Amino acid sequence: MTEFQREERFIVVKRKHIADPEMEKRFRLYIKNYLGVETVECVVVESDWPEYETVWKMIEARVSGNPAMTDTQALIERLRAIANLDSAKALTVRADDLRCILAALTEAEAKLAKAMEAIGILEDALQEAGDDYPGSNMQEWCQQQIKSARATLAELVEG
Image 1: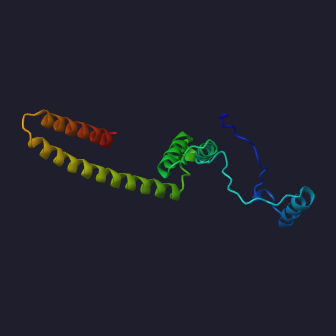
Image 2 (image 1 turned 60 degrees about the horizontal axis):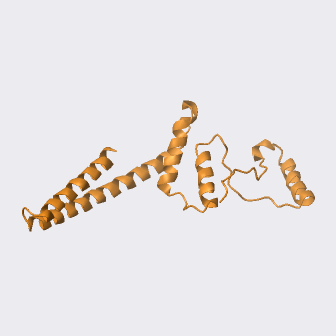
Image 3 (image 1 turned 180 degrees about the horizontal axis):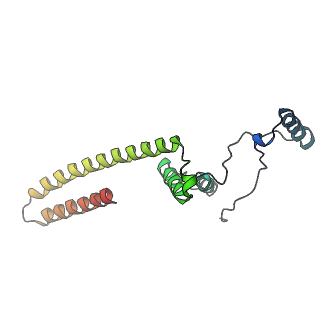
């Protein structure tokens, strides 16, 4: 498989740069009549936006046949992009970005709480199973599993 290459595939003109509505009308007619091309409905992300690199990574994943970026992965990419901006641009983070970040953090917190609950249930089950065989390899194995689960959970919480 060939390496993903970014391509310049569109010519985009911001409508605000065509000040005269009549000029916009003539421009559209020129594109349609002389070039034989209809305008295309699309999303354009300017290179100075924090989402720019995230969108490129999403396109690369799609073209490469990789699974689509999850919402959480996209959020992480957006946060990295925001962190790499200079402070003046970072201040322009929209309220939507902050709501998205809050929603993702709330979801992550809920998932962590469920994971902690699940580990508690497994700890109880392993303790009970190990207690059925005091002094045995089974009890030792159960205690090792509990210790390992607690260490993994501690890494997640401190992480």
